[in-house]
Length: 65
Length: 324
Image (cartoon, rainbow over all chains, first blue to last red; front, side, top):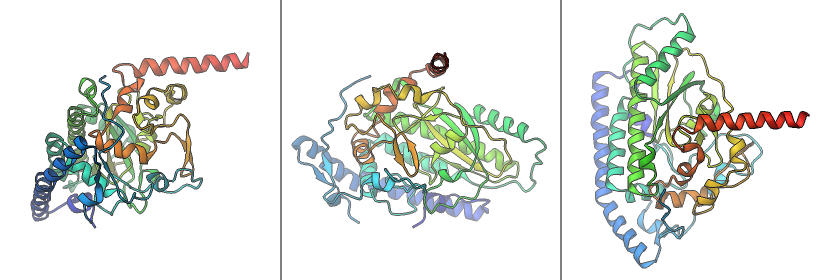
């Protein structure tokens, strides 16, 4: 697994490398945004319910491997 | 400061608790070894508490999450093109002063320099630079009065963005001089606090965060690693321990009692230590928490210099008394 730095920090990139990096980073950010809006919404609703009912959420049930 | 902090009874839990963060951190270990990432990471490796970190990211308010993504987009310029002709350095002192002036002009609140020490690297981390320029950026104290809410979380992310922008601008300037430079900001595989201490910016406080005279603990840290030859600052004594030993503000106000009144042996060093297993789940619940750094007496605006001076004078007086 590559770190954020390994994926998107490029020392002395060519124009093509920089463009490729920008596109990949946009895709990475888009995926994160979709996850926050999709899976995140489900988790936030469950979290709100857990707060109101007092029945704790189980992390492993929400976030699978 | 508002005191209606979230309850320590958390609405979430692990079914099978991950390995204790205190064990991973080396609490009680007398041998020196590198630190291991547990919770916040750059994605390089699977972290023991990564599910909680993802959960934290997903329950964060929209604005905090949005600013985080904008910050990540900015960070693509943390490294980049290096000028072909290398600027000759005739005086390290002059170039160090120039770099510090540049950092301040780009918005840094404080700046120091250090060699890249091994204590700043996580286990298995390989970073090949000679020097570190450490910068601090203050958070807005009025906004941070609202810790444990999205408002303070948003201010924290804003500060991260500002310090990223500053660090990136500085790294670009160094690369334009023909020297390698890379900005390490939020979520990077680098331990900023040991570097900041070595760069003479402050000392470790009881709450496990850096304390500096300018902003107390109410600031963010970023580091620019470079091969540009620089003079190094030295660690300073601003009398943090003199206050922390007797002060109990953070230990009392921490809702989960994660902060200890005594130092502990951690990976061969006797130092202030925060109980990871108590702190991090509450940090997740409380939008990044931050209670301890905001209640810290050092974090009151314009207090640090006079407080440090007073404590150092008191120490001298006590030494004299002992001699007499």
